[in-house]
Image (cartoon, rainbow, N blue to C red; front, side):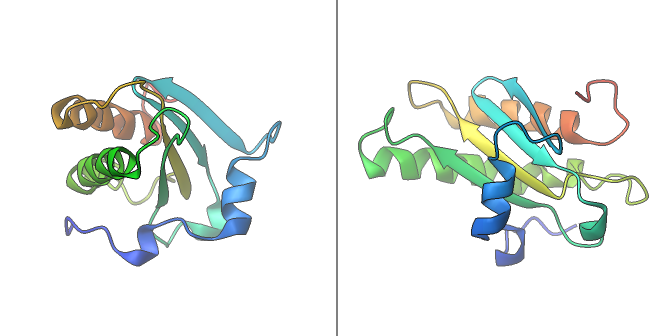
Amino acid sequence: MKQTFSKNERLCSPKLIGRLFQRGSSEVHTFYLFPFRVLYIYDPQQASQPTQVLFSVSKRQFKKAVDRNLIRRRCREAYRLHKALLYTDPDLGRPSYVAFLYLAKDISTFSVIDTSMQKLLVRLRPNTNGRP
């Protein structure tokens, strides 16, 4: 698998983003793993498409756009390097849409984000013991 992060892997659709952040929806699953909160949806119709992801950093916590962009770049890079963990078994379903919300109050180093992203992607894999 190529270690790229192309346009078709980015979650851009306002309808899908609204569906992902809809409160009280039974199709949206969530869990926390510092420094992230993860929201995801399984959509069987999108099984052949790559998983679409979104990275969000709070403007309230990080006032400067430079800081928010730095965190988003680190998160995207960690995802790009380890996204193959989601695609280990193509026969099993995987999340179609995923949102990573950065919750820490300070700027984490890349090593912290990288190890956390590895744990998140392992937990998102289907039929694993850690699956919520």
